[in-house]
Image 1: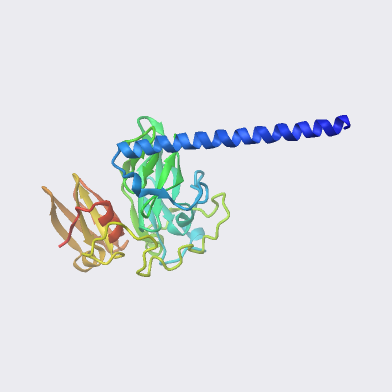
Image 2: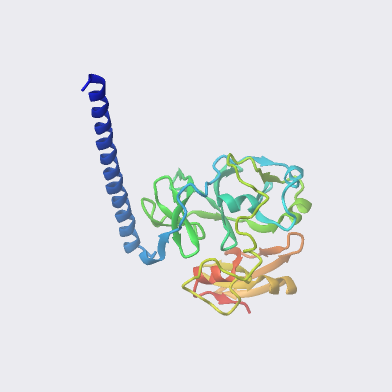
Length: 315
């Protein structure tokens, strides 16, 4: 056997065993991570049995971590008038995050008026939130994880901790029991935004990823009655995909059907020991919570009732 052939065989065998050792190490490390997370779930409030593989590998739904923005006139070239998005307003700046873009990414790590924020959208729940992404002095970055709790895809920070994006609460990992501070945002139609806020800045299609932002991968999901994932908790007080405004005040929850508020324009009600007032904003075609304390969320009824099984329902 010539020297070159001998060296080639030695190289191939060495490469084979190094590859095998790397695979074994990866398996052991992955199992260790799984066991640590499993231990967190067993100790915490999130049932282990309710957390499952989402069916999508991490990275299939990439978060936008370098967002760019464009003018209303530029965005109007492709955004649908009947398309929704998340609206952030302040005296300094107004921003709009179209669901036409977020449906492909679900998360945006952004900075708004000097504050690091997380913009989140759940296509199956039709819910969106904005959080301050600072925790104990540290600015966190997020990605969509490969874990799902019923219809909610969990998100993961750089430490590997899992978070529920609908509540802003960490359910496992280093930051377990951490909570992000919610910021006021509204789900509104593009047709309303461009009329009321013509100087708004709009999340740009230049995300760094190749996606067809004129196409919805979920098809007619928002308009039909079907649920892609069957929830363990069912509340028949309203149709599953009835649109509601969920109000939370001091740990007490109540849902207000969107159609009802749109009809009567103003609702003054009592939640727990607090009196709240909801007003219909005709210009933006959405609700506004006039009184404090409290937070308001627009979403499907099945989602709100699943998050808060003890929720009250107006009237």
